[in-house]
Length: 141
Image (cartoon, rainbow, N blue to C red; front, side, top):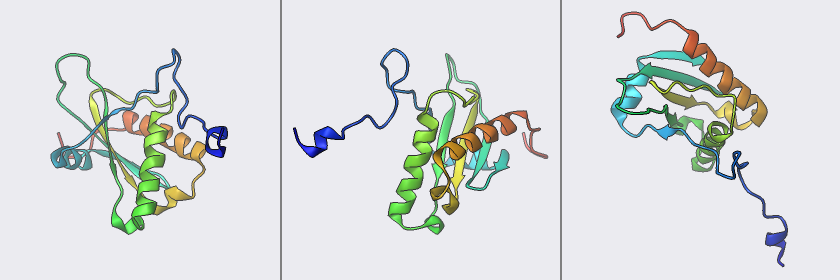
């Protein structure tokens, strides 16, 4: 047994039933990111959450999430660390009530690197709750 085998542990907690936790679908098209930018937004210390309603797809839909981490936030190592932290916060079970009829975009700031993970998770949950209760933007659809 090597030292590497001694400290092996799963990176994410398994969901009940032994399945890995579900990750929300990803936003991939620029038009979807731009549509979310025109929608509702909530600011926190580490990120801005943007949300826009989308046309319902046939069948059971799921929320889609996009991450934006610009070069202003730091070098590639820091940007990738921020992305990994956000993906893991989204992947953790419970607490996030993403609406299946919405697209969400998280625009990260550099401060996200120093935030405690539990606080990041709580900020994300409260931002999603605020955005779901807020009024639609003025002049928009």
